[in-house]
Image 1: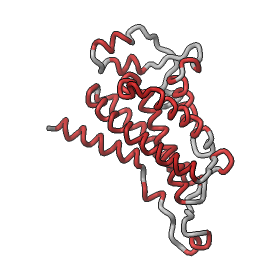
Image 2 (image 1 turned 45 degrees about the horizontal axis):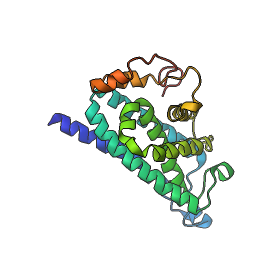
Image 3 (image 1 turned 90 degrees about the vertical axis):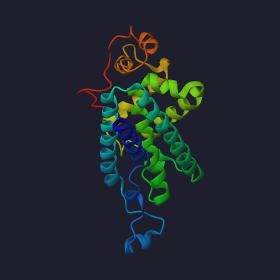
Image 4 (image 1 turned 45 degrees about the vertical axis):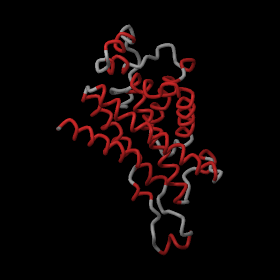
Length: 229
């Protein structure tokens, strides 16, 4: 019973991270906001950058908790639920950005509350998807299954989107997305790239999965003092 409640707690926490703090994205209603338009928000790029840094810490805490649990099947079920919602959010918000002709490189952080919502939700979900894939590679690939071309295309786009908002993200996030790009594209990997979490998460996996990655040697770290992912 305790494990059931703990799993449900993980699901609830993950859903909060995916959905984000909706209150922080609501337009600020005062005389100044009325002058610039009812649909505009006073949330600035600098303020959101701080909120984003906090959100990233929450992502990493959740990932560390899952790694510490060492329960392959429960992590599989949790990520299965999470990925479904993550890609749903990214697809929905991308449609909003596209329909409004938004270009992050050209326009930066938008003033419209609708576009801010789309940008922030997309940014955060792209990052948590990257964290999840890099730290649980074989579980993630098992979940994606035959939809490999779809998730690979979406995550490649995520890398481009996050890198177009460098004024909002920190260096570790840029590193995260670079590692993501190498993980999903073998032809983009550096000569010494190896994801050490194949070995780490292999301890949780069934024996047939563990043997598959047994011979991998350690290489550049996804975590630790250098990148702190």
